[in-house]
Length: 139
Length: 139
Image 1 (tube, each protein chain N blue to C red):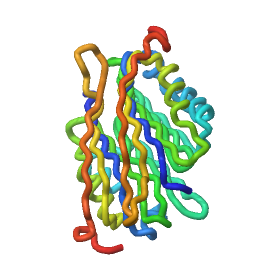
Image 2: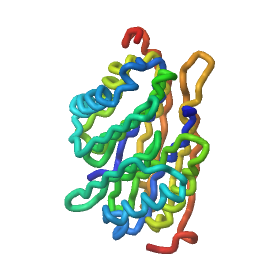
Image 3: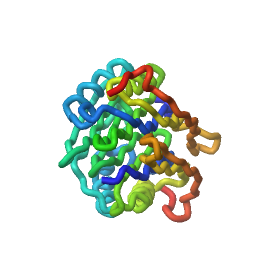
Image 4: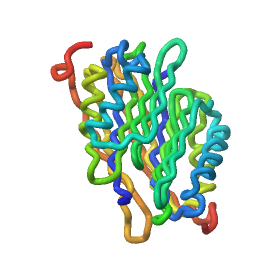
């Protein structure tokens, strides 16, 4: 498979603590996000911290979706990384942010696995910020 | 726990295909890397693709280590993301690159979860390149 991949690194703020504090809800959201983003799920793992916070990973073919959450801060550190032409990672990111009821996102899109002539590999980075309160509603 | 995290995004080139094509070897390397980086392992998952290539994730407390490999290209897309003061992600990255016998690395270190006054969160990025052939030897 081609080495090119698209990796979204997202700092999501103003998220609904009842969603990002619930490992089962996040699992459901991630599996649906993988489906919408046309990714083939290989395995998933979710872990609830005491007293709060969730870590979760879904392995999809040659890539992954992961999150670590701080419900007390409304903050989620989200990664969506996909390889191949068929996947649509942006759809997955949008769906997850909508379900988290995120109000604000700071995003870097990293294009990975760019092969140079000397068989080395590099990446490029594009960063932006989004206000999402109108789209996602208040949590 | 503090939201600040350090996320290393690494394009590793010139890796030994016999190492990065072997899911069991990568699992051993990752578990040892987590130990050296002072991270508490919660779960690990490794998947071998047909005919080649491995995806692997280790979940450590509130963060993760992941890799997707293309042995036929000597290429590995590596992530090491840790939160908290105790972890030393750079030690983990160095150990993994050494074990992969990587000859070259293009690295971005992303400082995540930086809280702003308005309760939003951002990240900052520092990118560099490293030649590793002298340190790691030829594969």
